[in-house]
Image 1: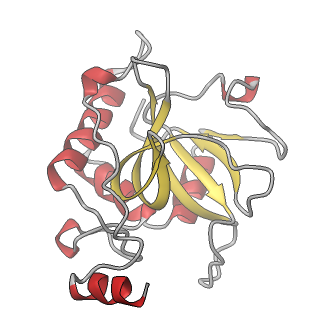
Image 2: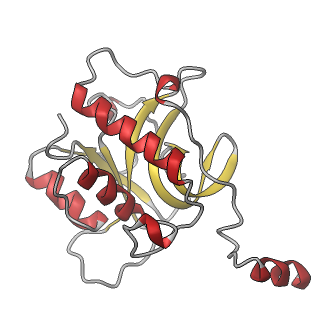
Length: 206
């Protein structure tokens, strides 16, 4: 085992960076509702095209700059919103407060076990998704939000619900992956320390 760690270190990789790249479905692979607005469509296309072009296989805490080789979760969201001519806050906690202040937040009750629950009836492609408990923040944030992604909707071939952003070790199509791209959207297990808190539309995306 020691030789494997040594070999990975020679390649300049960490164990998380050794995960495969995330998914890169095309826009045509998504089954979007017919009433999806042009702004949402443009935002989703930008996200998919940016991920496929950049192919970033690292999660870099504190980064919103692709030239560094990767993003953190809120950095990828920040990057895409800025490219959509929107001025978002930088952190996942601040992005949560931003959406809540705009009146666009839907909070999901503790104990919700299924994405088929009625609380998700308003979820739309392009909405931001928020979790707490994915790590222990030490920056004095006033809420418990620690992770954010962008909801993409369902894939046509089997209805898989997917999201896009930068993350470390979440799964897509049965394997753990790392970096900026597409992942399966699912709720945390009952034994997980993390919790799905809610979702909402970024101001400027209607």
